[in-house]
Length: 277
View 1 (cartoon, rainbow, N blue to C red):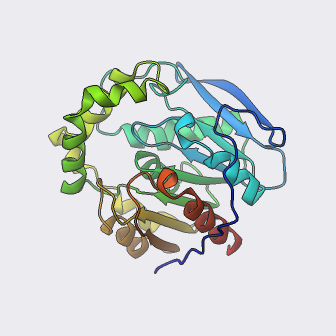
View 2: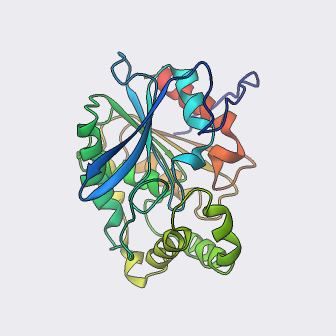
View 3: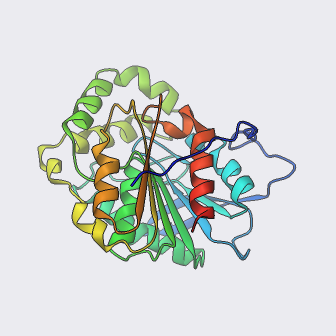
């Protein structure tokens, strides 16, 4: 089932993450979870009578790389927004040197629920990009998190050859990528190598979360760009086909980083989807 998004050209992006505005309240903090210091940012009031949008970044991402999207989501939905850095990313403490093949299950079934409990969030909406989107589906499908809705951007529900090809290509440009990544990560080389190594590990080709999709009872919105180098439309089609209450939308003229390529479309899709629930 397709979900149609109508972009509001009047939407204007707010200041980038890290630049304080005079109209949005935010709070930074650290949670001690599983021997790691996890950095998080809360935009708005978690005690407000609104569901909390929890944002889960991609495999090379961090809270800072969402840019203005968290602030704009808060502005347009009036919901509090929580974004955080997984261990080994952004401002959180260092992570493992090597990922196990179940690393996304660990994040979705252990770390994310612990953070939600730590902050006493009772009505979460999970919004993830790429690896973060897969983690959101795992958390909801395994009932580790009782989400009221799940929104995925470029999710991976199994390993496609297109994804492997995309990672092999970006690995060839590793040195040129580390410099911009170092603006967001304390150890960009470890962050990159850990991510590339697990995705190119032959054992990881067995990663497949399609069996969890029928167990997701909350509404799901699956988004993906039509020019995504790391996945095909089958990711969206698979989610909408296997998940009981899911809708999908392919964003035109858009790559893997949909929230950076077309943030207004993402905001419009999310706002319309949540309003329809």
